[in-house]
Image 1: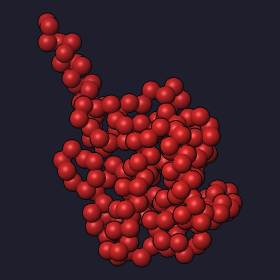
Image 2 (image 1 turned 45 degrees about the vertical axis):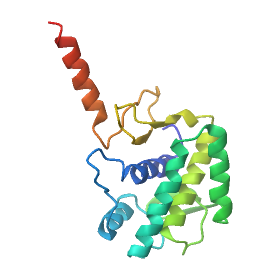
Image 3 (image 1 turned 120 degrees about the horizontal axis):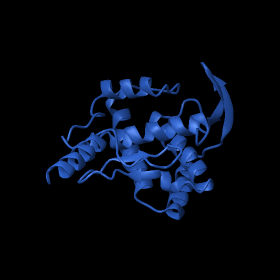
Length: 182
């Protein structure tokens, strides 16, 4: 594990959130309240969940805001993180609940889901920034792909997203290129 378990989970949830509207086929996988419900359950959120269109719109705004973290350098990311935490009046505290051991939360229990997503991602990116590991937040190396990823591999070798099958596309293209000269 590169980071604490909750940091890695929050980063992976943020990647899925940001990539939810970056598919090559144009489909937004977070376009409905039902899809948001599934995302909420999949990532094990235990916070307020209104399950309505207003909440979905707030999550879409959070998605746009969080996507900026993959577009800036480390110093700008630190500024974005500080702004998110300041705007949410985040106060970190240790908690454990459900089957989870001690981990950080930084929002009041009834904070809106979008606020929790922003703050949990910001707290995780703070760990990434202060560990000088910001280069682990990457854009997919796939041709014409706008998806993002977090490279949690030990050897920092992850280059492709999962959302658009870019790794498979690159491998097939390389195979064809090697065999086209035969």
